[in-house]
Length: 353
Ligand SMILES: [Zn+2]
Image (cartoon, rainbow, N blue to C red; front, side):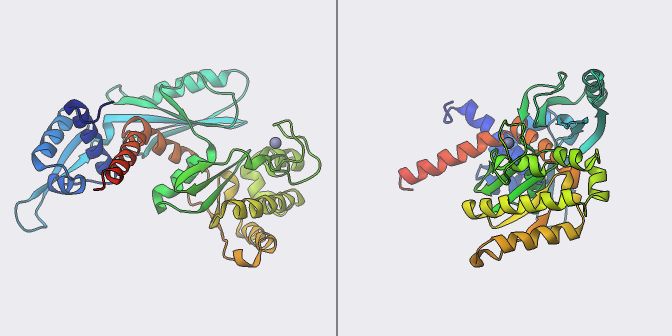
């Protein structure tokens, strides 16, 4: 793509305008200042985006001196994205508007083969009256068992990345945070500049025995994953496990294994702190205190600053974060804009500007 060609430049400026509006409404003058694009061009971009039905003009704002400014916002109902979360016993489907707000959510039990058809029906119900364009789907799944009726394009997102994105959408970037997703499976990610997936974390060796789905033995997954715990305790769902099983030997043992793996990972990655996400993050405060104390016992004296935080989104994190990532990928084209920004930074360095 030649970014200096006028039609490409216009496309990119349209995306830049939308990405600013994603954060909230803005006037033409503010957009022009924020993006460093002249007012005439901003006016043209706004007109074309209004014509395409992607943005709307709001009330005039008389609060500031001078000519009243009109606030422009994204037309949130112009498009939708889907998010699918596949778990061992159920599939959840949600649909979000262009601001990432979840409009509808359905949970489909995964029994027999009907769940695939039931998922397809849920998708049809959630597409709405057809006026909103469907931009694509995010899929959060650790298994290969995926529904067939997923609106395309599809982006596959590891659980920890989705849940981290949900937290950072509320709290801002959490540089240095090690995100530990604890649900039926385990997953991890770390924010080091980018949000980096850590797919091998669940397979760190923490015990001598215990067959793991990866084919290895003694993996963290086999010691502490929700499915493994359900088997050990006979409590089938995580919701119940969190409520009834927090003080059980199985959960306490799992916390011990997690502390071992976390202390290694925190040191190796120079992580600043840990945030527990996913369904098991609903464990009571006493479990957090136990994990925190074990972790500090295992960490060296100069790493006693590490804190274990609870995610704010609970079991909603995966779908909220997945929707946000799908919007960025398919509607706001943020990956493209990030690459462009990197190219611009590089060229400003090499040209000595
Ligand atoms: Zn394994």
